[in-house]
Image (cartoon, rainbow, N blue to C red; front, side):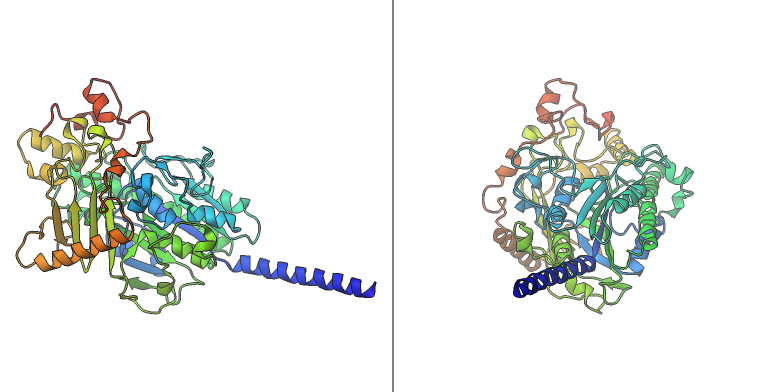
Length: 527
C-alpha cells in the first residue's frame, strides 16, 4: 500500500512539474502582431526618408527593431499576396490561390491555423485574406487569419476611410485571451486602398502639393496627381495611427517586449502601372520588424532580399513549431531568425540575394476571364520580367474599363489625355501592350522606364537572370513553365456577380465593376 501511494504521489508530482514546464514554455513563446497596410509602396514610410508621409508608428518599429530595404511580395495583388504570406508558398505553388478572388484550396493550411492548433490565441481585425472564398473540404468557412474582432467602430477622419476602430478591436482581442497565453494577431487595415476623399490630404492632413518631392515619370505632374498622392499619404497615416495605439496598448500591459511586431503592406500603391503589375513599385514594399526580447541588435538597416514567403517560416520557428509539426505544405521560404540573431547591418546573409515574383489572373475584364501571366526575378538591383501573353492587355481590356487598375483621378486624367490627343505616352506606359521580355536597373531606374532587355551589353546578364528564374520555377513545379500555364486561366473566378465580365458586358448586360469609374470604359476596342 505504501509503495502504491509513493508511486501515485511521484506520478502526480511529475505531472505537476510537466504542467509547470509546459506553462513556462507557453509563456516564453513570443506573441506575434502582423500589421499589413492595404496598397502601400516602398519607400512611403517616414523611416525611409519620405517626408510627405508621417508614420511615427512604423518609424518606432524600425528604430527599436530592424528596417528592411529589399522586401518584396511575390505577387502584387491583395488575395495572392496574402496567400503567400499565410502559406509560405509562392503564388504559382498555390493552385487557385495564385489568382485574385479565387476559391482558396482546402489543402493549404495557414500559419495562423497552425498556431491556433498549437496553443496560440489567434485573431484578426478588418481585412484578413481577401477577396475570395475560403472553405474547408466539407464546405465550412475557414478562419485563415483567425477569429474576427470587428465590433468597435469610430468616426473616420475622411469619408472613404473605414469606420472600424482597429486598435480598440485589438484591445478586445487582448482582453479575450487567457492570461499567459501567447497570441497571434493580424491587423488588416483597409487603408490606403481606394476610394479616397479627393483633396483630403490638403484639407484635413495639412499637406501641401509642394510636399511631393517627385511625381513618377509615368504620370502627369499636375495638381490632380499630387492631390491623389497626398490623399494616399493621408490614408497611410490612418493605418499608422492605429499601429501607434496598438504598440502603446501592448506596452501598458507589459507585453511589448515579447511581441514580434511585423509591419508591411500587401502590394504597391493603387495607381496606374503599380498595383496589379510586376514592376519595382508594384512588388517592393515597406517592412519594419521589432521584437525587444528576440532581436540581438536593434536600429539596424537590413539590405538582404526578403520575400513574403519568409514570414510563415519565421512565425512558426519563433513559436517553437517545426514545419512538419504544423502540417503545412513545403515552403521555399526561410525564417528571418538568422537576421534577428545577427549583429550585422547591411547584407547579413549573402544567400539572400534575390526574390522571385509573378502573377496570373488579377481582376477580370479580358475575354474568358483570362489573366496576364508574368514571371520575374529581382537580383543585384536588376529586375527581369517574362511576359507570357503579349497580345493581351496588361491592365485589362480598354472597352471593359482597364479593370486591373483601380479607378482614380490619376487614371482618369491619363485616359482623358489619350482621348483628347494631349499625351499618349502616359497611357502607353500604364495601359499599353508590352514586349515579351523586360529588364531594368532598379537602382538607377526605380520607375522602370528604360528596358535593357534588348540593349547591347546586357545580353549575358539577361540570360543569367532568365536561366536562374526558370530553374527555380521548375524546382517549384510552376505549371506556367512546365507547359500547363493554361490551368490558371481555367480556375473559376469566385465572384458570381462579375464572373465572365467581358462577355456579359459586351453582350449588353448592365454589370457593375465598383472599383473603377464609368469614364474608364473606352467606347470601342483599341486593338
